[in-house]
Amino acid sequence: MTQNIETSPAEKSADQRPEHPDFWCKRFGAGTTPWDAGKVPGDFSAFVDRQRAPLRTLIPGCGSAWEAARLAALRWPVTALDFSPAAIEAARAVLGDAPVDLVCADFFQWQAPNPLDLIYERAFLCALPRKLWDDWGRRVAELLPTGGLLAGYFFVCDQLKGPPFGILSEQLDALLQPAFERIEDRPVADSIPVFAGRERWQVWRRKG
Ligand SMILES: C[S@@+](CC[C@H](N)C(=O)[O-])C[C@H]1O[C@@H](n2cnc3c(N)ncnc32)[C@H](O)[C@@H]1O
Image (cartoon, rainbow, N blue to C red; front, top):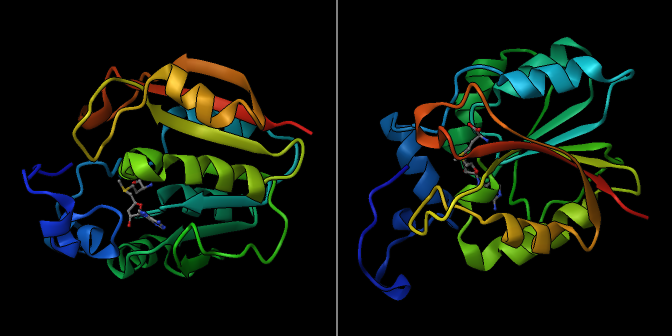
């Protein structure tokens, strides 16, 4: 998603550090968004169609929020959240006046005003530096009640430099298995080039 610049973290400016909104604002501002599918991916679409009732959904790191537009059209209550004001602007352009709760906030600080049934993951975990992964695992567990679902796309590979940062299957298990059981796992057929061949669709259910 970006060039890697060989400097120590202390020497890097905010727009070189993916844990900072400026990193993402710079890329949205320049129109350099190779992670953006520009559509609702197939496995998520099929997952949504399988549900018998709307799920109260959070999309953390929503970017352009294509999926939120789809959920809103189906009258699902959806919060699309991103800490980059430029991403929020891109999402607003996609969403128009669709009834989406579009929030500019840090996922790690945000307080859910209402209970959630689903957290949708796409290109968010792989956008986070590894030092934030344990916090991500704790946070998704804390936001979902027993039976709640974490569903989406995981960049499962050994790509060290990022974003996107690859995660090994056993690393993902270590993050999620304390609080979740995996109920779906398959390769993805319609990945965009940056993720192709290294992306898996997974659904995890929150344990009691
Ligand atoms: C690679 S983009 C993916 C965007 C979108 N999910 C998609 O699939 O197109 C990662 C997004 O996560 C957002 N982000 C990164 N860290 C965040 C945080 N701590 N809280 C909220 N958003 C964050 C960035 O601003 C960026 O829009």
